[in-house]
Image (cartoon, rainbow, N blue to C red; front, side):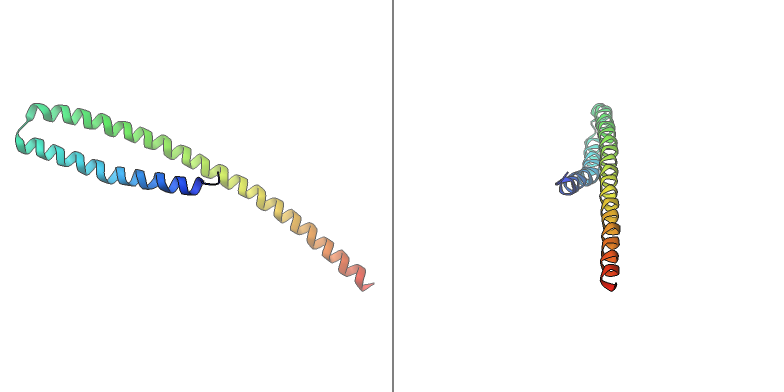
Length: 105
């Protein structure tokens, strides 16, 4: 979990790149196929492109769910640690108050 932040930032950059570059590349290929006049290949390219996009979409969805789960777990652990620190600070305040009361008498 120590490198979680760095790892997720790299993964986010990869997904952002894929979401930007792949659809534009696919549209360029479709344009070239249409421009050249390769009609039979157009159907194959559309089916292959659709399957690839569907596969990437499902993969991204599960990655996003896993990442959200990991972030939720990290936040839960952080909250537990903050509660523990808060409890220890309350005990420390009481100890300091007791020491002051003892010194005053």
